[in-house]
Length: 315
Length: 284
Image (cartoon, rainbow over all chains, first blue to last red; front, side, top):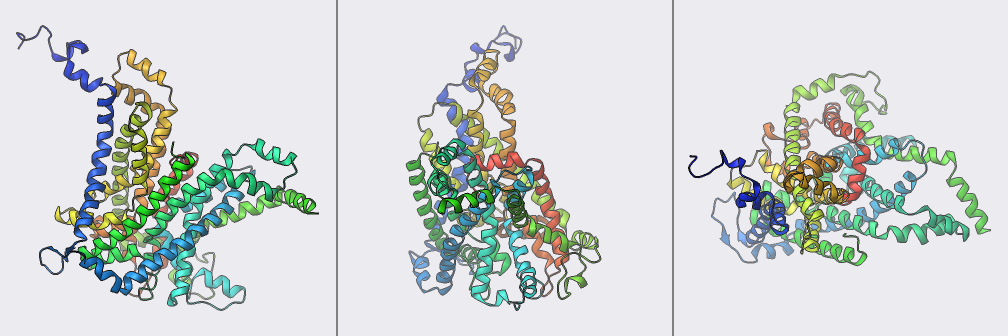
């Protein structure tokens, strides 16, 4: 053992004499970058790149696990099936409508909450908590709770209506009313996060700008439109795009509130993907639907990357 | 005229009564749903079906909480949620600490590109992972396991955590690391003995975000883990409803039990959470 080395053990060798060790423990920048970024890269390849390629491949297959038949190449059959599928149109239309209603809705409500929260309160924590708790409340819980709020017999919404002299409303029997209730729940859940982001933006605007505007005799309304809004634009753009992507994936709240009902009137694209995959085990059609969803959000992401490059908010 | 109106408006908007009204609106908006569930959880089934409905419980009872634990394996749901969230948080932190260090400290040629990839991944729709992951997990016999959730949740939080940690690392002076390396630390030694401890608040913030993301996730948990012994809390809650019955007081009790752990985290670390959310500034 001792014949090959004058050192008692490998550990007693000076660092410089152990090139293999120094390469790993004291690497140059490039090697280090590769080592540090490798876990993330591997994880993203295994969990995103592979599944997405698998998804696109499966979308061209006739693959239904209930039929017991092996997968068969079906070309564009899954995609051709979509135009004739009324539930697909319904679910896609609902998803788009939810996005168009709840994204601006949560922006407006979130902005209002942020302006209120930005007032000079003596105690900051109650305000902070009332924005944080809705954010931390699981979406599925929010769906359950709002479903209970809108209950036709014992819901608090109908109770309030009765107290001010209005009749009770059976919310979940009517597609429109059920849809409205869902949008309200989503706006409530999303607006507090929006408010936190906008509030943080508001607090970075230097006070001196407002003081200068004061000297010029600008009122509160003018200061809002000429200082606050333009300076917050980059923050708002980022928040809006993320909200849009999240809205396109809406699942938890309608699933818990209405289960897509009445019928499939309030089903979303995500719910239809889930149903085709997990309940019907029709992986081919489920994949094709997911490809449509993927395309929709890639479109929004592309828009997002272009916009932040434009405004320089990425760094 | 208009300036007079504006200045009246100005003084009205900065007055004390207005602040009280604003605080009232904010608190009611933010806390009413959670408060309502808390009140419901103390009501008896008989009180719940009274008309007009009561707001405060007349004969408060804790029976619903006992029933929440005995009717369904609530403790198991909590344990599954907790372990999945904890393990995915640990994995996310390990991977994102390394990536963030590279992004903050090394002169990378493709830094812009890597940042773009991270932002693109943060907008990735998790729903589209449902089908291929369902297929893969089914083939690998991983449906109804923690692993089926831990891996996707790690990817879900990786971008946010990397962004938060990168900005924290950038705030730590390089001199400290250099000093440690002169004293004989390797680069990894300097990373884990100097940089990580100094950015503990950042690591902690990223950890809370990852934990809450995992604790809240519903779609994949619903699709992959349907076995009652492996359900997470949001999925387990569904088992309380019978075919026709909807035992609201018991469900409310279970919801309260599910909200409390995260609420405690949020109350204690509120400032940190806010700073993390606005630095990562992305998901919600």
